[in-house]
Length: 137
Image (cartoon, rainbow, N blue to C red):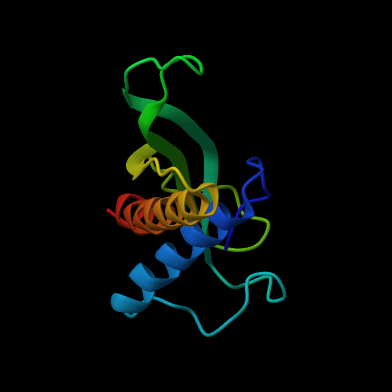
């Protein structure tokens, strides 16, 4: 179950939830109830806290302007906790978990956008899986 959004990246939030669900399913831990409608249903809440994007591997300056990064570093940070019931206090709060992914810069803006979104999705799914592992340790 995703926490209320604090990051303005729907793609990253969806990726974290998808990664968490896949990890729970692999362990046979997906519940048959829905914590949003059944107040007695336990839930693992995943929270995407921060998404940062920065340049990496600076290139050489050109006559047209300042140096351009050869790649982009995407850094995602999240946490997770368990709720036994809908109104119960959080339990088993995981420490913040950080993952990084790189996307190579491309001259074609459309191709770079697709590469960047794919890197963001991969990082988010990896973060979701790690959050499940840490929260259930």
